[in-house]
Structures are given as structure tokens and as C-alpha cells.
Image 1 (cartoon, rainbow, N blue to C red):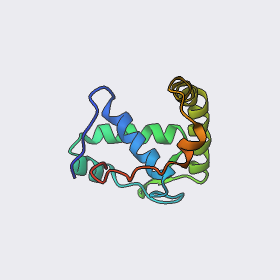
Image 2: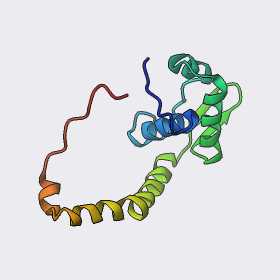
Image 3: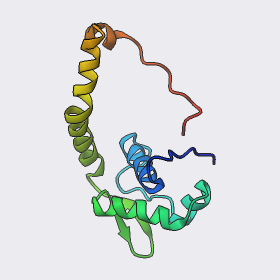
Length: 125
């Protein structure tokens, strides 16, 4: 499995973000088991401690729970909590910059919304 890591962000934070995206996208649902630390470390060729640190952040945020002898599982309500926090972050941090840029370029928001989104790049994963 080939992955490109961003050198400006710690790998454990990037891995945490990947798991969050999987929960938001419905790849991981509430009650689903996360891949084992060893499996992720082997797949991404990273240190198991890095994976453990990412998973621990998810536990600390109560998005994932440890089940002794069984592994890590997505908690009930994790997706709803993530959606709420992601929306709040978008509206408070990202949207003002995006809106200002749209206005600076004198773009019509209705036309932008009517424009089909580009197909996702299949090389990213």
C-alpha cells in the first residue's frame, strides 16, 4: 500500500485524519473494528507507536473505544460528533476565507453551486 505523507504534519496526526475521514465517509461505521495497530503499521510501513499514538487521540476524543483483548472500535455517536465539530470548524475557520475569495473574484455563488464537482482523483488514497 503506497501512501504519501505530508512532511509538515506529524504522521500520527495524518493517520488520525484518515480514520476520521473513513468514519465521516461511512467506510467505518459505529461499532466497526479499526484495523489492528500491527496491520496499519505494516500496511503503511510506519512504526507501531505512531499508529498507537493516532489511535490514542481518537480514544481521548471518545470517537474510538478500546475493548480489552478485542481491539479498537468506533463508538456510538462518533460520526454525529465528528460532523458537528467538522461543520463548526468549517463555518468558523474555512468558510470566511472561501467566501472572501469568492467575493474578491466576483464569482456568482449560484453558478458555482450549479457547476458539477470534478470526479475524484483515483490515485489519492
